[in-house]
Amino acid sequence: MSEVLIPLSAIKGRGTATRFAHRFSKDARAAWDDGWGTLDDAAAEGNARIETEVTFEDARSAIARNDSPDIHFDYAVNPYRGCEHGCVYCYARPTHSYLNLSPGLDFETRLIAKRNIVDVLRADLGKKSYVPQLINMGSATDCYQPVERELRLTRGLIELMQEVRHPLSLVTKSSGVERDLDLLAPMAADRLVAVYVTITTLDGELSRKLEPRAAAPHRRLRTIRALAASGVPVGVSLAPHIPFVTDDMEQVLEAAWEAGARSAFYHVIRLPWEVAPLFKQWLEMHYPQRAARIMARIHEMRGGRDYDSHFATRMKGSGLWADLIRQRFEKTTRRLGFNRERVELDLSRFVPPSASGQARLF
Image 1 (tube, rainbow, N blue to C red):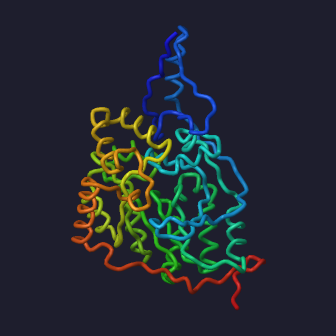
Image 2 (cartoon, one colour):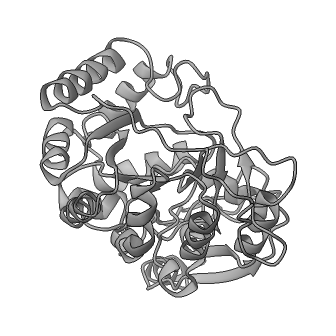
Image 3 (cartoon, rainbow, N blue to C red):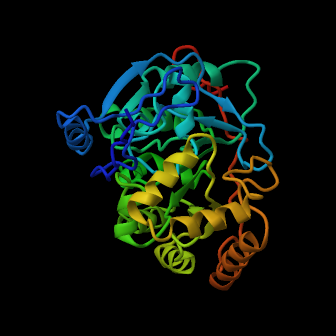
């Protein structure tokens, strides 16, 4: 009997449409027609509303140390595993494989919250061996994804950072960062924080397909205005740039500059491990006529492969097409005035926390 695959269709509010098997899976499963309408039932079930589940874990450590030369921060703290924003291109999706969960739908519907992350970070910062370096939040999964409204783990981390006067950078696609302006604005006055808002495109319809539960592009621009008006150094991230998909780089930079962003950076799309087949599925669902053309340009920038992990090229790509994207970015940022002044955060203000939970004054 020949196998008949279930045709995929987009699920409202979700970036992917399948619980794609991860690379450590022992079993591979395929649907087949048993004559009882099973395929039709499965397709209908796949398009039904999928609720987000949150489970809790106790973290053993809070700080992830970075030794990659192409990443411009030393430490990272991530209060959540998985991300409800559902960005189809997210390079962090394969991390769910280590939890025996799918990098597809599980990554955006089965979240893990590190409920003790603030206490663990306090202990890490209080160690005699700790040397303060810039800590970034939002480097793997968005620290302001929807579940943060209730759990407030990110806010707890920022409160700790403010208490011990530790420099911090944030990267987000969410307007939720505005909630914490009462903490961020005073920290900015002391040169302890910078925020980067990711805007991949100004096209709302495209954004809804690419990153379905992130804030709308116009809402992110409003967030940049709010941050800038409060004195918080704010930049714009155009990550990732996807050839023939997110092609309004110049317009994004112009809108972000007008809103108050004064620094900018970009990366080209990265497709490590399971992200590549998931992204190809997404292209076939949403842009089938362009799918081959888009992948051809990605391969051109990645040495003929889906992904090139070499530190020198993985962020920007290589070849003619990558060079054209770089020229577009550099010419536009130069014309507008981006990146003329580097934001230097102050490491000298750090005061280690005491065991009682209050920062030491002497």
